[in-house]
Length: 120
Image 1 (cartoon, helix red, strand yellow):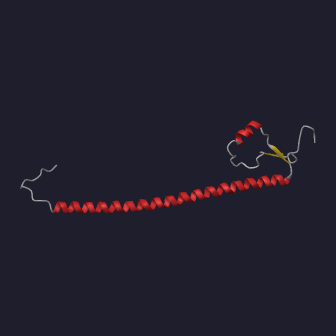
Image 2: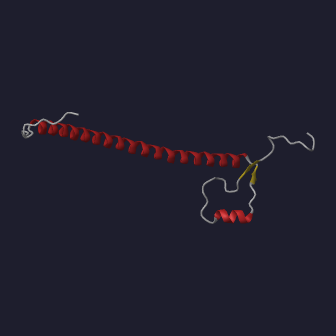
Image 3: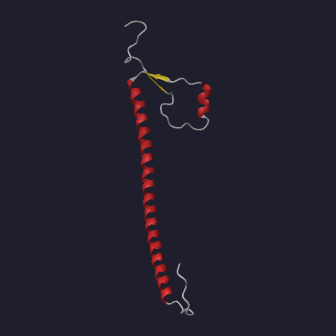
């Protein structure tokens, strides 16, 4: 191997110093920016495996949060559909009652004074 080249397999992985990408507490971001932190270099396989497992756990936790949110939205949607259906039934019942009352009112209309209404 020449001096200017390196084998990529022997190059250690670079990871952020925090290890996980969870949201830091308030003020921590300012401290990190002020310190000008450089990513730390991890060269031991155990450290790399630990960091990878932490990232997997973080992704799984986020996935669980999203699953809970989706289930909540689906439940809310079911409730809205049920309420919409009940409201539609009520509206249809009111329309039929209104039509029935309208027909009854036309049938029981008081007699006119003998003059016909002009047709349109």
